Length: 60
Image (cartoon, rainbow, N blue to C red; front, side):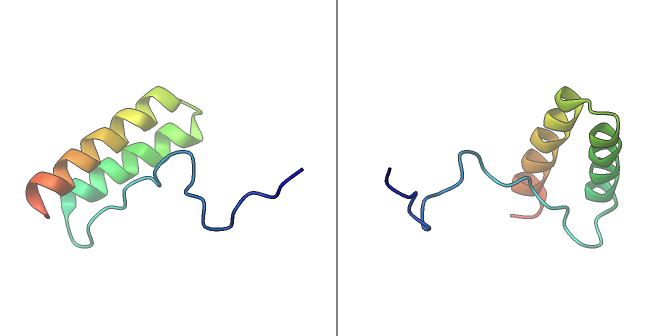
């Protein structure tokens, strides 16, 4: 059986990271952490979408 290439991309993108010093990013990051602790994957995904959108609109 062939080994997977070490340069193969992951099957999904890494979660977005909050921008340092941004209160809104920190708020969403906190909500995402809570969702993870509660195993609420839907809420976690929603936070990722909101954070990606915010990063693109405000910090790009």
